[in-house]
Amino acid sequence: MDDKKFEFFETTGDVGILVYGKTAEDIFINAGLGLYEIITDVKKEETESREVKIISDSISRLFINWLNELIFLFDTYNFVANNINLSLAEKSGEISLESLLKGYCFDEQKDEKKLLIKAATYHGHYLKQTEKGYEAKVLFDI
Image (cartoon, rainbow, N blue to C red; front, top):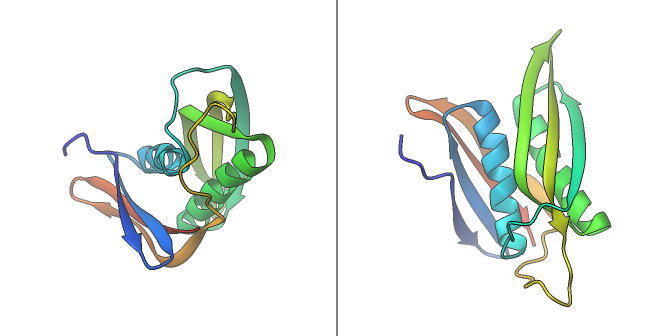
């Protein structure tokens, strides 16, 4: 598997991302980092941190909920993550995600704003295991 983490594609009225990773955790991390690249030119500074914990009954719902939580953190707190530590666990038919996000607060006066993302959608979404690892596709409503 090459080191490509994600690639963007455009559709009518939306923007999408194809995400690659060796593990399911990589898919979540790389999708999060890709999401922030759609929003802004991500800086390397780490002055803030956030914890995110989510539980779902399917990995696909967990993935979309994860991305929507990151959008919420940006919309509410202007938080941009550039370093994501994350773990997934399955128990009693539920999948849980625990993550520590490190990054900074976006400053509209100093930082470049690219696209405003409203939500991650289920339209055309998939998350699957391949012979090279994992792959996911998601469209963002802009």
